[in-house]
Length: 400
Image (cartoon, rainbow, N blue to C red; front, side, top):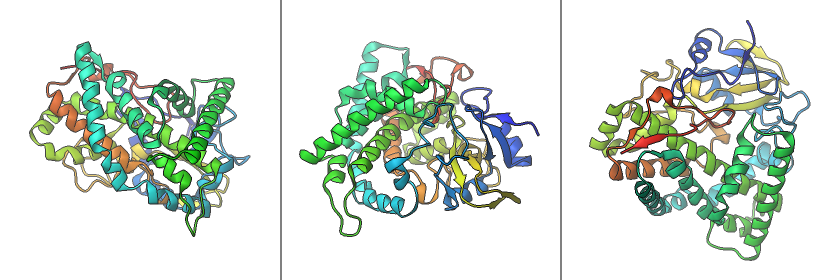
C-alpha cells in the first residue's frame, strides 16, 4: 500500500477525510508520511486508540534518535520536549507532577470561574454587537475569551495576549515557521514565563501559578523552577489555542444544521451533552497524539516493533461505528458519550474540566444573547487552519 501524506486533506472544514473510514474498515494500522518527511504508523480504531493511550509501553520519548520527527523543525514542535518536560511526562515524575497539579487545579477552582467566564462572554458580545454584523466570531469572541480566562487563572497580564497568540501558534504549527522563528519564539516564551514564575514566588497572588510556586508537599516536595515554567507554558498554550479553536468549531457545527441550534434554544438542559457531542463529532481536531514504542506491542493483530513512532487519530476513533451508534450523526442528547477528545488514561488532558466549563458557559451565553445567530457563509465555504496541531477554522463569519 502506498504511504499516505498525513494529516489527510478534508473535503470541507467540518467534514472528515474519507481515509478515516477506509482505514478503520480495512487497515487500522497504516503507514503515513508526516510534514517532516519521516514515516510513522497511524491508529484509527476506537479500541486500539484507547488501549494505546493507557499502555505505558507507548511513551513520550519522541526525542529518541530513531523517533520520527513530527515537524520539519529540529525542535520538533510541541511534542518533542526534553529537559524538565521529559521528567514531567513519563514514569514516576509524571505521577508526582500530576498529583501536585490535582491538589490545586481542582474542579472547585474551575467551577468558581464560571461567573467570570459569563461576564467576559457578555462583554465580548457587547463589543461584537456594537461593531455590527457580519462578524468573525473566532476573532471577536472565540479567541479572546479563553485568553482572558487562562491569564486570570495563571495571574498573567491579559495585555500580553497578542504575544501569547504568536507563541502558541509557533508551538502548535507544523509548517508555518522556520527553525529560526521557532527558536526565537521558544526563547521569548521561556524568558517571559521564567520571569513570571520568579515574580510569583517572590510576591504570590491568589492565582493557580502562585499556589503551585509556593506549596510544598511532604511526599512530593515542591515543583522546581523548570517544572513551574513548563507547567505555566503548557497551561497557557493549551488553555488558549485549543479551547479557542473548539469554541469556533462547536458553534460552526451547531449552526451548519439549523435544527441543532433551534433544538438547543428550546432545550437548554442539552447544553452539557451538546458540548460533549461537539467534542466527539469534531472532524477537524488536528494532528492526533504521537507516541514512541519502548518495546514490541501487538495492535490489531500486528506486532509493532520497539522504536516505532505511532500516531493515534482521536477523531477517527470518535467516529468508529463499533464504539458509537449513529457515529456519523451529531446526536445532541447522546448519553453515554465516552469520546476520546481529551485522551484517556494517566495522560488524559489535565485541563478538560476548564475546557468543559468554558464551552458550556459560552454556549449558554450565545444562545441567550444571540438566538438568531447564523453562519454568514455556506458551511462548505468555511476554511480550516492549515498546519495547526489542534485544528481550527481560519474564520467563522456570522450574522444575527
